[in-house]
Picture (cartoon, helix red, strand yellow):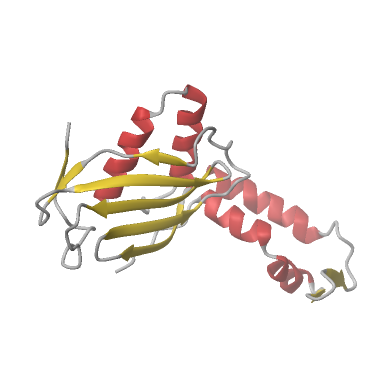
Length: 183
């Protein structure tokens, strides 16, 4: 089951910022997909852009009302942030996590994948390696627990992978499972 997030400011800005189709609908323009061009009675600097900027500033001040992460995912991500040795990268990682929007969540039978999107314009990229190793965790229903990897793409969060040690996770409800960090 996928849990929905009440959308925060970065998600709304990211959505509206990339959608040419939305702009055309609001401005009465025709978008020519093949030519990647617009045509219509309005020039590029329109009242829509002015209204959008006002809307954007209001949305950016609104707090997100709910995290898109499960308690297990939150604990893993918090541990990964705490392990980050470079302050600049820890700050960028925390900023990206606070603005992340859930894309999908899948129990693979050998662990899980949680994919999310981040507005690249709202925070700096994380430097270094493409992956961050997470903690080992004891998970209710698994004898050997799980390990975790946070995958980045071009310095931005992309996927949290949880993997079991040769045990099936088909019956595990990761949204409700009990867990402990292994020290």
